[in-house]
Amino acid sequence: MAIHPIVVYGEPVLHRAAEPVVDFDDELRLLIDDMFETLAASNGVGLAAPQIGVGRQIYVYDADDEAAGVRRRGVFINPVLVASRIPDERPDPETESEGCLSVPGLDFPLKRAHRVTVNGRDETGAAVSLTVEGWFARIMQHEYDHLQGTLYVDRLDRKWAKRWKREQQELGLDQPGVSWLPGTDEDPFGH
Image (cartoon, rainbow, N blue to C red):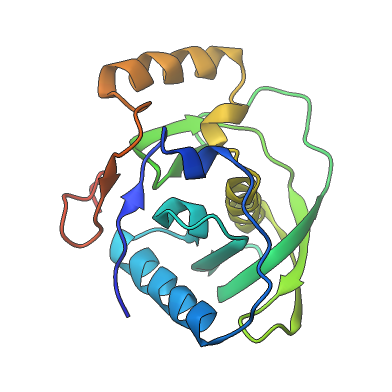
């Protein structure tokens, strides 16, 4: 297993739809093991393959599901996500802020659906399904978006999008070729 560098906003693989996985083989299982190791080293809760420069429809997660009172760890391959309606109101900066390993050190409020169901495959090709609410539903939407070529900052409302653009210019988060290595580079979120 190996820890991979996490690519940063501006890297082309983050801004295009990922390709479906066809072969459920040892190479795929090794990639998933590497993704879990990279996720653990980054202190994150979810990681999509495009974030390590691999344009395939895979994401892993490992986090507490507070609504269900359990810890969830797993993988979705070629997922399909169905979400409840996203409320038509401003996001609460105290309870609805989101961050991203590919937008290091920043977080912004974003309104998300409260409940989602995700259907997909695991590393063996077996069907898997998960219905979650609240914060864990936010994780599922965030990682699913990565597979569509969308980062959470692409969804910000006008007020927060202006702040993002200002931060983006100041930090140079728009150039390809930028990455950070979890466990080696300074943790951009201060964990």
